[in-house]
Amino acid sequence: MDLCDINQIRALLDRHGFHFSKALGQNFLIESWVPRDIADASGAGPGIGVLEIGPGIGPLTSELAQRADKVAAVELDKDLLPILAETLSAFPNVTVIPGDVMKLELSSLVAEQFPGLSPMVCANLPYNITTPVLTLLLESGLFSAITVMIQKEVAQRICAQPGGKDYGAFSILCQYYAHCELLFEVPRECFLPAPKVTSAVVKLTAQKPPACVHDKVFFFRVVRGAFGLRRKTLLNALSAAFPLDKEALRGCIEAAGLPPDIRGERLSIPQFAALADQISAAL
Ligand code: SAM
Picture (cartoon, rainbow, N blue to C red):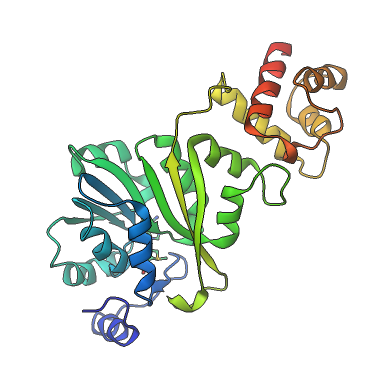
């Protein structure tokens, strides 16, 4: 069947007595170019094992299964399992794993599902878990690339550069672990039901951690501190986050080569790294 044909989808869902759950971020694709282009962009191919999060009724899963050696698709909604058994029956290289992706032991899943393969992630993510799930996937260090459809606004934050209005702690987290690209937008009309916002596809390609960061945990403490008080100067934000007086912190900012009245949202990763080294030495 055509898993993006709205009439066939409605008939399938009716036959299984399925009802959409807003809480599970269920917006299913109804335009076949979207899963095709996402799968093409993901790099799925021979030698690749793809972890998909939230297969829904399987439009992206089937595109991935035609390209990659193996697809493991984690679906939280039990009501979708009998539907997936039907729609993916032609693909012996797909395993549907019932459960919550946030609660799975990802390294065991990868070892069991993708022996001898290079693991990647590709998904049309449920909107409500975008930030925690991307953090989990990036920090796991298990995947060479993560290609996901998310809210356009979050995609812009992930790819934002210093000084822009969208730049923040999450931009830095993503760009620490990966080369981040916003690939294309997907209009609301491509989904059933249509979400309120435009979506976009981002690709996060894993990279070596920046060599300028000497202590990852402390670096991220400084980043969170700098963005903790968004409209304050860096100096005021840091003095709320670290037990150092303002003179000492002003000294750290200047020793890192930065102007004393700069705001945190202007700092690049190397600048945050230099600042973290100074604060760490002063503490
Ligand atoms: N891939 C399908 C598509 O593109 O049409 C469905 C995408 S829909 C935006 C998100 C899917 O994620 C739904 O099937 C939903 O049930 C599932 N889901 C929601 N939260 C989840 C979680 N924590 N773990 C795994 N799947 C989840």
